[in-house]
Image (cartoon, rainbow, N blue to C red; front, side, top):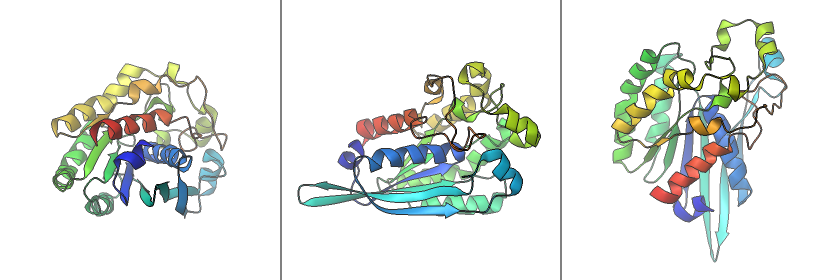
Length: 257
């Protein structure tokens, strides 16, 4: 595959951001698993609260922290690692989040790839932009070391309200359960994009950070959600639903590395 063809042995693809990034990582790992041998898998588990379990489904406490994939070509093997760092850059528990983010970024080596996304849990664009400007030195110092830093836009599949915004904490449990997932045709594409991607995308480009522009592509998804837990279209989209994220990343690797 293009990943094993272009990336050096022992390279790592880091997926850092919110649950959109975690879904992207799952789809990428499914893609790699179909073209290589899985050497190791890291699984994270936590005990959800009763409301979380009821709202988000029975699998809410499980998640992939990453995996290592091995390809065999001729007499050589090549290992590629994927690391998932779901979380945020500062909207909650800023000091801890910043420290964790910096720790991930400092692990990056030449030609490692960091795919970053963030923003859905911010109530105001200004807060997101302030936090991104604070982490700018970490991003640029990583780039100076030869690390590939990429920003990925979010996709419409993550937004679960008709205005396209993800303010789940602002609605009640029963209302949230009844909402399920709004089809992409019901989302105001322009206002949703401008609320988040429309501000961050030009900022990243001004810093010399390439952007995977996946927002428009996400509206090509079918008009239904594939939900494992039955009530949560955010955290349990089936592999394939976010394939356009993976396809966009593979195109970047093919053309730029």
